[in-house]
Image (tube, rainbow, N blue to C red; front, side):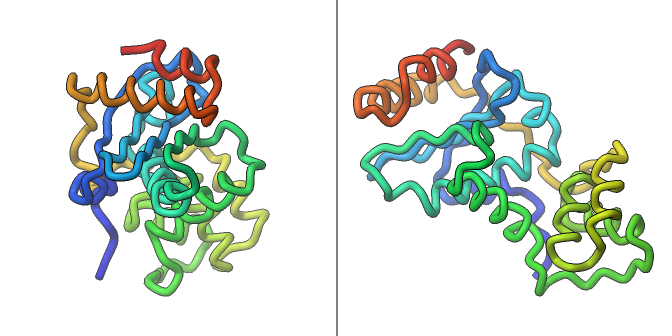
Length: 203
């Protein structure tokens, strides 16, 4: 087995609907919505630079998969806004899940000798940004923290290669589904009225 080429493709093959909406706040990357016996939905924020970049979006989708797998049974309806509060234990779990899902430590067989070359090999071979690869390499014990910090902040861009070949589409049928799910979330006090306006402020 090798790298997963498309997280979006995997999610869609499992029946998860991946779509776009424009939120008012660019800092929110995505929203996950789950209702028992209904279609799980991941809404990516068109206003988020992170959601617009294929490799960053790939990590965000893996993050959302964690929410759907681990948090979707907690209540009848769950709406998660990812990275809204990175200190939250649920968010920390999803942050840790994503890189480990994309590149499990036991599957890595990297051959590069220097920290920079190793991180680039990880990024290009497993579908990470340079920043994401640097922190994953550090957490896997492959490089030290000082090297990880320097490489994560280097601004080096990694091309998408064969990863995430398709862009999520905005499908009109999703609008009514998303609206009904979010309105139900508000009714059940899962999200606030302010968050409802945030999610529905775009297309």
